[in-house]
Amino acid sequence: MPVTVLDPQTALIVIDLQKGIMAYPTVHNVGGVLAKSLKLAGAFRARNLPVVLVNVAGMAPGRNEQPARTATLPPDWADLAPELAGRASDHLVTKRTWGAFSNTDLADYLAQHGVTQVVIAGIATSIGVESTARQAHERGLNVTLAVDAMTDMNEDAHVNSVTRIFPRLGETGTVEDILSCLDGEGPRK
Image (cartoon, rainbow, N blue to C red):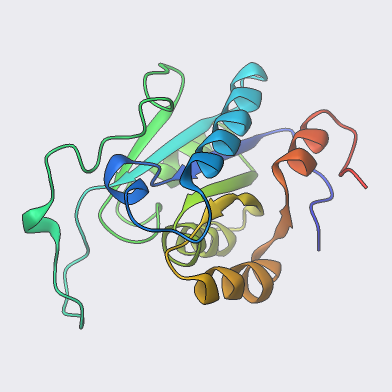
């Protein structure tokens, strides 16, 4: 279902717009994803709504079939895009798993601010964005996904998340749809 409404206490969660992740080859232009995420962040900040910036700095323990890359990462790999960083009102979450709720203070932070809905954007659609959306949904939060403010390293994975998974977790919409809902106008037609 396309985005219909935003709760009065909605937070924006921006996933992994950091130097290392943004350097990966992606399906959509990373500059466009960053610009749309900045537009959302500006709108949320202007309304004194919570903005959560998430980066990843490590990985969950356990074996998998892909070799670990953390030993060879440059020191600034986890640094947020400079355009995003530096707002005292924003909340920074550093994760070591795919989802932003696992072993972080995100759930407590949102609860302290009375948040009942989250808007999620970032990279990668099928990994950090989808995992965070799943965790938010499992916690009973309303979830909205800004589908034009995200990308993935794999087109099939991106399409699968946007068309098959996200409609089961919440509502989807463009940044313009979400901004229109923030203004109380409802989604644009």
